Image (cartoon, rainbow, N blue to C red; front, side):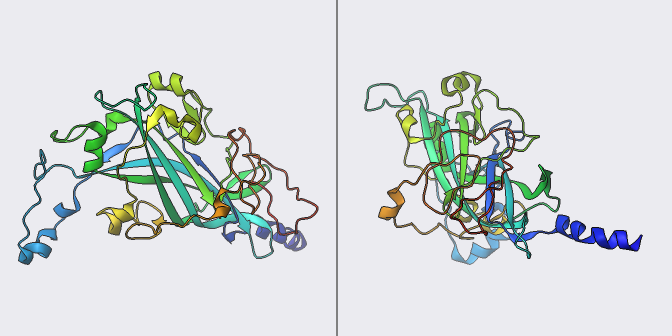
Length: 336
């Protein structure tokens, strides 16, 4: 009996092995939770207990805004549910679920219906929608204690909300309502899309076996909430450049939690953002940014060369091959 247990021990240890950080990351919208545009008005940080005491000696006069009462909500937050899958190399260099995704950039695209007084495009046709874009960098994203098992392998998994904070000024501009007690920004939101990159490359479009089937107006990375608009956009990637004649991109701000008054309170609700406080430094583009590499399947992790994700989406089951190029080293990872 003891011999049997000893013989089985290596297999048990291998099954429970974890990598510290991810070398492969897959990402998708959590469609099972993305059932409505979840925009919530927030209690102002200035209303928290003790805040007035901090400024009592400064004798600051309250800033007056047209139509804004003392208790008016000055910020809104949109929570977008997403899922992340992560694999890395454990101590034996074996592919295993990872505890953390060290850094991942998420780009959010928000589609808003323009107010009825919306202007016309330069081409003469009425532009019905505004698109607002925001990039957020997350660091040290923790995976769940229980990995996802399937196809003879395990991977780290996590679900969290990508949070976009909307200042009142943006909500008023997008809804053209400057005197209402609370601008109806919830009703204006038509849909959203999220995309992510890891180590500068698009994350895989892995789809777990229990993921819901795509409905009207859905892709693995996007959701349209209104039926009338679903038929218009279908399953197209409306946030891509080829569709931008359908909407305007107004000069308004949406923020990460680091750029909002709620920055000190993120840790119990969201992964850490980079930087933890304030806006990210502007990146300087280079000629290499415009270079296009070879196309890759959306179900596979791209190589280290620069490339652009194809317009197709991943299949309903994960890729299971562990093949490598004959010219690649043994350390190259198999796709998620």
